[in-house]
Amino acid sequence: MKPYFTLVPLAATLALGSALAADLPDKNHFKIEILSKGFTDAMEMAIVASGDIFITERTGALKWYSPKSGEVKLVKQFEVSVKTGDKSRETGLLGITAHPNFMKNGWIYVYYSPKKEEIHRLSRFTFKQGEISDEKVMLEISQTREKKVCHEGGSLAFDGSGNLFLSTGDNTNPFDSDGYPPLDERDGREQANSQRSSGNTNDLRGKILRITPTDDGGYKIPEGNLFPAGTDDTRPEIFVMGCRNPWRIGTDKRNDTLYWGDVGPDARKTGPRGPKGYCEINQAATAGNYGWPYFVADNKAYAGFNFETNELGEKFNPKAPLNQSRLNTGLEKLPPATTPLWFENRSCYCAGPVYYHSDYPESGDKLPEALDSCLITYDWNNGHMQLTKLDEKGKMIWKEDFLSGKKFIHPSDVELGPDGAMYVLEYGSGWYDSKNGKLKKITYSATELAGGDDDGPDPRLEGLNMKHPGAALLAEATCLSCHQTQNKSIGPRYVDVADRYKDTAGAEKTLIDKIRNGGSGVWGDIPMPPHPQYNEEQVSQMVDAILSLDTGGHKE
Image 1 (tube, rainbow, N blue to C red):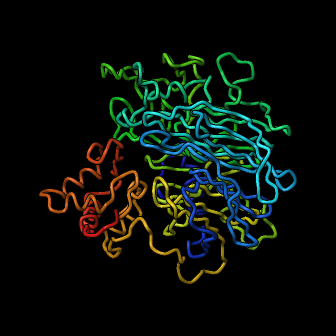
Image 2: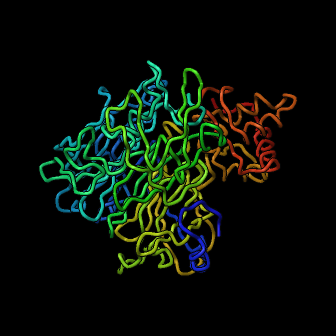
Image 3: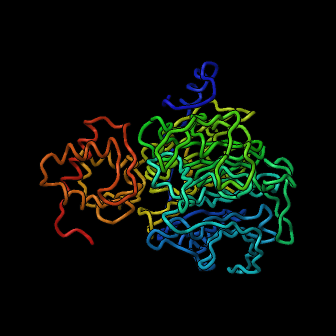
């Protein structure tokens, strides 16, 4: 079994878990079909009972895929705020879901960033005859767009009781804190302090909200949220607080349990200020505080830090956390911190749905019974997927990689269709303005399928000799979240790296150190996280593959 971090005791489950995981079908029993391609920064999808799929693009387009015709049509072009310089880094048309009774009422819920106002807006629309109309504004959340602020969340999902969940990020600049929590109390640095958002009981940012939509386009507060309605210095919409960037959420509709992946901080190593960066997959059957910006992973504590004097403070207490920031408008005493379902080294983990085989008795396209009661999770960075087997009480039995070797380029959403098949929405190869996003369908075959999936070469690796062992390592690494060979992403192009270092003495050692230890400043101030999971020989092969690129005549 693949090693992993977990809070579930292994002694009683390891033998059983290994036996069950061994029964998972090989990747060659799964067919991957490309339904449509050419999406720009594809974000989230909503699949309705007819099999029709609504897709949001970060740049503002709401699109509709028809399984009958195979066509994609533009439903509406939203005027949204998109990145300009260091402004609006992660705003746009962020999330979508459909009402459980969509086939009768046509209601869809959209979360977006209006172009002119510095807010995020949750609205309900009515879909009819290929168009949406009758916007009902349900909720508006103030946010900051200047000074490298990012982390906006934006995922939407219903549970089985008709409650709507909305994830929101901490809306904070994380780049000037050396990868540790942004707790900057200096005047003029308010945008670099997550205590004003994630750690604030009176603020809707850095949270997952739970509301019950009403027929008139408003909402009610369901029982069981973190703070009862009327509690001073709190917001009753909050179900979960203490999130950094809960970018994708999923629900188990059988028991109304919420799952989400929280993208972790960039700290390269554990130090006096606290732990290195981890990503979390979280589970909440009841409301709770999940710790950010005071804790990460299994409540590994950060220390207070004075950004003016560089003085280190005491570590925060997960049993009795305090928000004593001058920016806090909520309670000083916070709920105790809750631990995640599991956590891994920092990457970009996301939560999808929980699969139940018996929910699709008539379908020939459904996933196999071996995946029953499994939470599907995925990593936006490297496209890898995981299965977490859950028992009847939601406890983890085992965790295994899923579809290893299959190629997914920045999966931004994973959903189950009414046929029990798995649908994957790919964001595209770049960080901004990717125009090669894809919609894919994954079905199961009891017999092994011959041949591979005809998805063509990975556009992020154009120009690399794929027979080079270093190229194969790069193809599976998280490096591709920020780098491509020929096209600019958030990090430099590999051809530019090769051009700069190819004839430089000691270049190989310099690049090996950069990849293994991380850093910033050479190509800009966006930090590159470390990659300690690769040994020196592996990193040396990656570097050799990069330096072997032909730098003459590459794309501008």
